[in-house]
Length: 230
Image 1: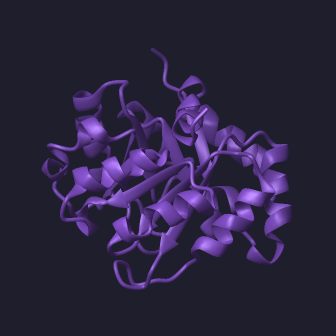
Image 2: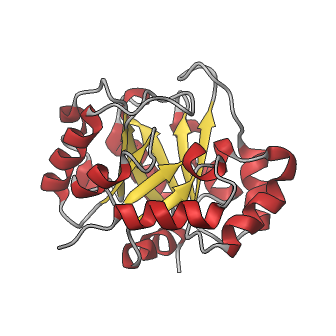
């Protein structure tokens, strides 16, 4: 099974809360991953920032490679970097199952999305709260995932932007079940349900998980709130 197909098996289990490792204890990363696995986490989210596209620096290929050795869980890698096309193959080789690039960071999104698929990963496109949803026109057919940012990319712990709900609803009408809808930023017990109602299936949560003394209970509570009755 290809990495892309492996990531797409998550369709059988959504809604899914993906802990954002940006909020993890990096001094005890192996323990953090083991703790998340023990409470049934289905995938992990990694935020890669370069200090250029966004005003913050997080981690890169060495941390991704280390995580790949620690777990078989799908790794959802969010590239908040300039010229991501230069690094697609290296991030894939380091262990990414899904690679998401920002529409604001690429001049030719179709080419980059096809590049991601060609290496064998699931392809994702992200957009910031201030970016017009129309910028996605013309590339959705090459997306396995659309990541709607509910905070400006660059830092964790920011306040949720309500415009994300409208964007989720809009994209959901466009793509139906053909594309994963993911939301990232300010996801907690107060915001997750309305994102789910708007069509989100994957929910990136940082402090809402890692700020809890009980990861399992935090994930169960978020997952219950993300359930939407048909």
